[in-house]
Length: 79
Image (tube, rainbow, N blue to C red; front, top):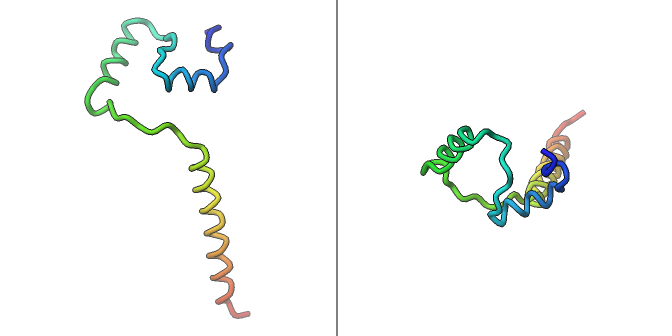
């Protein structure tokens, strides 16, 4: 636990991305079951690293798009 508390989240992400194994907090038999589950063909999908800028872009685009849609709909309202 002391190793995880001393490392920054960014360094943990970099270590994971480089394929460096981190210390496990599980019992060895539980870790074996987790490894067996993750090595099944259905769970061995390679994914792109998380991109925070893409998420922020999607959120920003959605907010702007809904704002423009609200202004368009408001222009049709007759008082």
